[in-house]
Length: 442
Image (cartoon, rainbow, N blue to C red; front, side):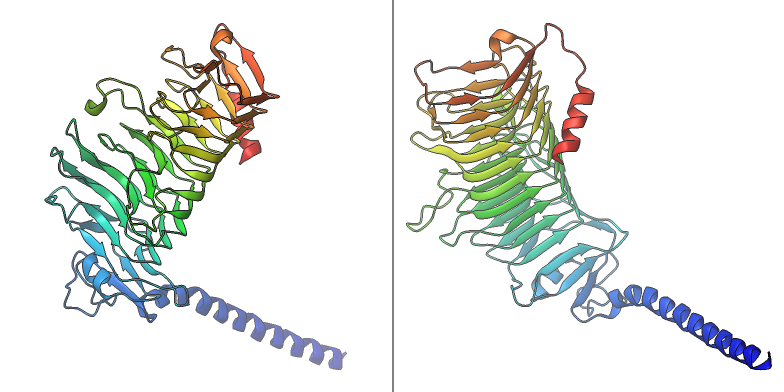
């Protein structure tokens, strides 16, 4: 019995020691990350109360984000503390594939606000974040707001990316109240303007909230020019007075001989796009012309699993430039409902525009679009639209005689296969159907 008690006591002591060690290790493990953010090499800080002559440490932060933009190199990160910053930020330094991104991040648990209310727009200073010919850049967690003008010669943007910039990630940002109030003006929430012979690539735009923009003739989120490879996903784009998402080509973004002036090879998925309308936009004289998602002269794109409602149009596939097409686009598994015009509209608005060629529209739900009763129905096929396929779409229509509109009666190359059309004299509640469909596709 004494030997057993001794063995038991020995084991008890060792178990107690192990528990103490585990407890101590847990304490160390959980406290290291909190301290690491203030001491790790390549980590810097900006604070409203800082000074640009400081070292950029957590205890001696810089005052401006521009100081960080001018200083950071490969793989380095600046954490911006909560507060309001009134500055134009011009980013020209690049990260690298080998050593990592240059990262501009909100300090954990705090909200940095980049506010343009007191800034003066010029031709050089037109975007709150301006990335020019820089690559491997991450912007994460900022509120970007209040850059406004009534001058048609000024062109404000929340974020502008130009030249051959690649490997750019915009995530978790809140972009709003970027405004051009002129009847002939232009503004963007986010604009990628690929105007270099070196194509932009590896672009990620994820989980941003882009809203309440006064856009004039432009769009909330635009990719234009020589851009090859992108992902636009999980964003919420709403309450803007023009198009929500536009991926464009053939607008002479770049005129250099080796430049491919067409956005291509990308995915637009799992976005929520709603309440975008040009009805009160002075540039449109009351015309309801704003699409939720617009493939405008682009190619090789997948538009999938988006929720699109209460816009002027749902999804548009077209080109506004004669002789040019949006082509090889797949539109699948989207839910598109209650838009003012067609849920899906393809082709040019006239024969003098471009068109839509060899696109596939498959497995979408369309319900009770053409809310303004302008005769668009659920699907409209306009001029210069050929060899497009509509397959296995489910359509709930207010008017069985106007579900699908084909403006060019002589065009017979577009195919309709296994679509399911249901017509109602009165609009029923489809809330459960839409929710169930979303559960399946997401």
